[in-house]
Length: 301
Image (tube, rainbow, N blue to C red; front, side):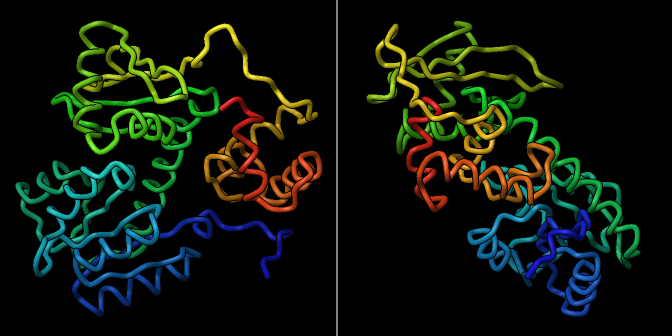
């Protein structure tokens, strides 16, 4: 059982996927990462890596560039084209050291490139930095969901670069099996008209507003849901949740673990547990699933 009184190392909260067809290298990296407190997944090729990713989404990937079958560059491009994997930082590790090869690593979506033979202390420091930066970026972008908004970013070629979880749910509900192609076409129209809308079944109207450039060659859209019946506010149940408890419940309803909630709100795991105890008591429930089931009504979702 985990001792909550003992502080966890930063690595202890993260999972790393290591992909390398060389068994000795794979074993060395897994041992080093485990010693640092990471949870480690291993794969010998791209297919095994994709199978691992279908089960667990890691916080970072160490990826060999040269492997049988699909190479590391092609695998990285595959990850970056898949919305729920695109945020994972990929660090290439390979014996390929020519400038052209290094450039391919970055253009395929990698955040860093280390040349074999590996210097483990350097690899671990680089990986920790990228995992920390990716987590901070993800939490900042997901924070818009708490306010009932969604965010979508497109790159200079009009391709999906990133979208918040709430935006993903709304676009899938609006366009179904035609998403994301239909959603991208709709957003391109929003860019021309500044603001457009689309009906969202019985939930209301999904509105997209083009916010212009958010960075180098990136365009930002902010999405929000207008109620189905304007002027008829949703009744808020008379349950005395504190503002902090409301935040915790909101993230719980979005499928976040206690660990994720602690990281997002900048509190300890023990504090999150205490908030959830109070929430369950006030809602008259005993489980997370029961609390999640009524959270939509509580939070006007």
